[in-house]
Length: 297
Image (cartoon, rainbow, N blue to C red; front, side):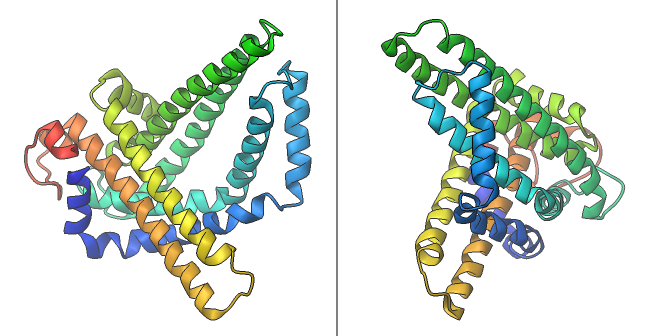
């Protein structure tokens, strides 16, 4: 993490300009969507649809997970659909700029736009991977919860299912995030990038704990910015110019955190693969040879 922060601070003018401004539309939209998604006209119908889907699949409504999962999935689904255009443009363009800056010799083109198409393809494959992981987890959870109708068993099974789902979701999140870095750094796309990311994060083993720790740190920072936005903008009922200015500043803070997240991924990928030591004759702004723990931690 220290290496990532050092990289960010060393090249502060670069990372706080173009990539942060590229990510700003996505960041501000994400913050504005938090209070609006639950009040959207599509929310009740989507929630009802998911409840019917869960009930028809055999998910016991008496489980404590039932209301939480249906509400959370409805919010996640609507947020994903509303933000998809900005994700494929604003967010991925920001990531492509960070990758191009930290890995300047990986492809022949010097434009960040050249990385956008591979990142878009890889992101769509990531969506399929996450969807498949969720379906597998929910299927196993339904089977587990239907083994017995005892209330104590349902509580224990719900708790175990929540823990197992959190582990699977966290690993899927980390692998898919790394797949975007692999796609830009190696010039590959789609499921090839996902498989390479799985090898980097999970199979090699050294990066799993570090990647999860970095993901927790980034999500904690994003949650902190979201809390600031809620108390400084959402709670305020009367909109004025200074509230709008605060919203813009907080949105920019959110964008900077997203840029730092991309830097974390790039530094971790370089630490695991040693991409500057492949003999390609290129040099990146990371510098020379460093040990894995020294680079990442």
